[in-house]
Length: 137
Image (cartoon, rainbow, N blue to C red; front, top):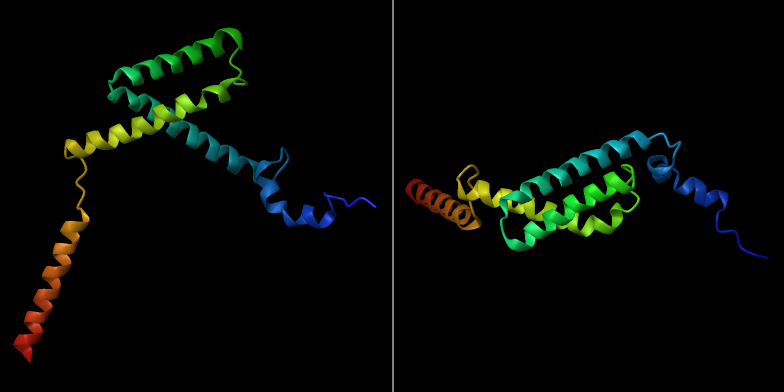
């Protein structure tokens, strides 16, 4: 007797996850919305990679735009072959977001208080509490 892999118990067990990914799943619209938000963030990261001006990233950006032109001319807008270029896209997106954060930090748009500053504040508060306790006692 052969054991059935797809038995009824396994189908019920994973019904929640299937509702996100199957074509007629009840939560498919949630999955598609999350995918669109992620792609917008990735493409925004690619655009932010223009802040990085090294030769390597210029070549990666030219590769990305060459990919888009290839898909537009020869594939009619379909993205069947886009998976081959995902490493280039992800590298540009990560570097773009990193460079944007670095740009905001160096231009004082965002001020980070480091752990040393926090530790100094805690020590100062503890010393004040000890001083108050000594004065009361």
